[in-house]
Length: 118
Image (cartoon, rainbow, N blue to C red; front, side, top):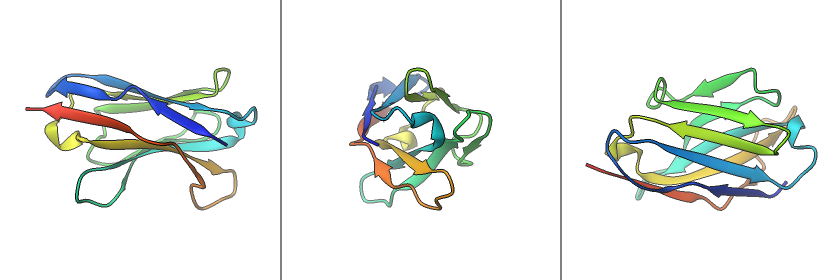
């Protein structure tokens, strides 16, 4: 599946952004979806994920209660609503898909830059 992330930008601390990730495949609803991020000089880290049906979500401790992941299978799109942004949230954000039954994310979007100024 091809993924296209968008919605990044520059925001002040305390602000909000919503990232979107559009998938090309009609079978999008069978994939679990995740968001990851990579800050300069750091390894890529898990941010959030949502299962194929949207009923189960998981978050990194660092974003819990501030970020919300959701999906609209009719639009082949997954979202990441980011509130109360902090400078440490600055990173390139990537969406990824994981086939049902697979342990690894096997398709990745190109990334979208999020910059939070203090």
